[in-house]
Amino acid sequence: MLKKMLVALGLTLIVVGMLMGCGGSPGGDGEASGETALAITGNVENEMAWTEEEVRAMDTVEAERENKEGEMSTYTGVPIKTLLEEAGIPDDAATVTFVAEDEYTAEAELSEVMACDNCIVSFRNRGGFSIVMPGYSGKMQVKGVVEMQVE
Image (tube, rainbow, N blue to C red; front, side, top):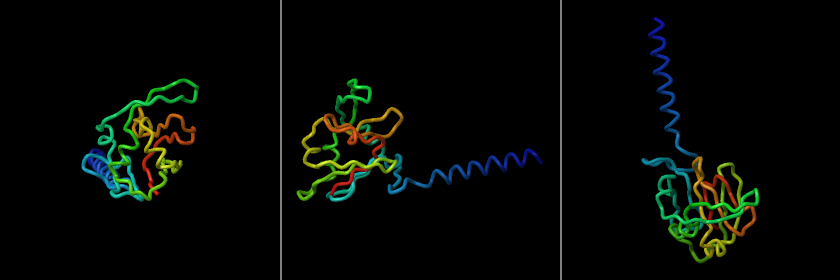
């Protein structure tokens, strides 16, 4: 009897775990290779969505920026302008808002971001991405970025 109960409990836990894994991410379409980790939305020709693996497979650059301790740190990632160009930016677009997973936002002039060769979506050690914009205020360094909204 106890053995049957343990088997039933085990199967129930497996089914519940599988159902929880089918939920998808809020605001994103799950893909065969994983869930959307970064999106570009708004005033663009093509809204884009990438998995973390897709972004990490892109050509990367390094950017140096002073960290909280006042020391220079080197970050690796994909240029923001490369991602925005892939989405297609219309002439009337003026700003880009970086949105973090905790809903923190920071807005920048699109023309400044497009002129910045070392402004990147950097790879975080624990997964996900951060915005690294050397020469910009700390408020622009968005940790856990999940979306770029173009207006």
